[in-house]
Image (cartoon, rainbow, N blue to C red; front, side, top):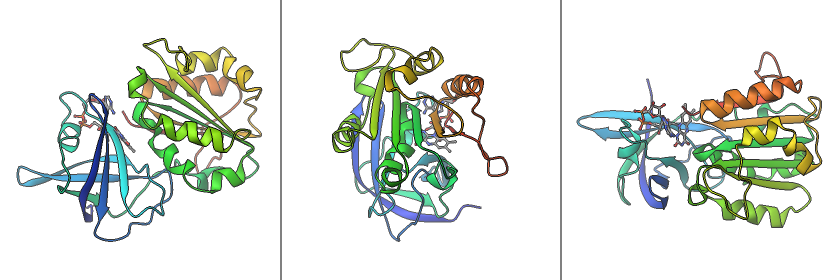
Length: 249
Ligand SMILES: Cc1cc2nc3c(=O)[nH]c(=O)nc-3n(C[C@H](O)[C@H](O)[C@H](O)COP(=O)(O)OP(=O)(O)OC[C@H]3O[C@@H](n4cnc5c(N)ncnc54)[C@H](O)[C@@H]3O)c2cc1C
């Protein structure tokens, strides 16, 4: 049984066709850990329908933000991306998810954050807190989209790269277009070939690296397989490892 908090849409940004960010003001504060997700609900034909979405804002912000694409013929996302300022949305009162820095074991030196599309959301939230900058020597974001205009929040990452030039490494991957300022390859191809480590001068050794993966299952499955071949293993609370995953679909 979900307990709902009522919220109001206070802003909506369209990045390109079918790609949006929605900002919501809740009636009460909702504490959460950067990287977690909530269930978003809407009233529809006399009932509540809902789906999970990552929170992409920093926990101390006085609003919540979600980033999503409209899935053609999807049951929920076309309705959520149709909301306008002033509309009511509902948010579950218990944020959850393990794609958080609390799950990263002590001793990790390099944090790798790899996302396809809207899977970048939890990493934005994490990077807008102080903790990663205090804990890790290197933070690497590998962000893959099909086209350049789908690469939402790119300016945020460029700003972080300027602010932390030694510590932060931003690698944009664009698969269906060739652009001068992105890698024209699948992220997993670049990872499997060793080009990713070579380009950064970092080695994905299990003792000092933690990789978070978020997005579609094909990238997650392929990346996990490649990382396991390098000696990394899936993380769970019972069996600490170096690969943490959140599967969107
Ligand atoms: C923990 C968690 C967090 C999530 N966070 C986000 C988020 O921050 N942003 C976000 O956009 N989505 C997120 N999702 C996915 C989201 O919950 C919905 O599944 C998605 O918006 C589609 O819902 P729908 O009802 O419109 O489509 P459905 O009717 O459920 O699905 C239609 C089809 O679309 C496919 N599909 C599902 N999601 C996508 C997608 N994003 N892109 C392309 N195809 C898709 C499904 O495999 C299915 O075959 C998350 C999922 C989980 C489990």
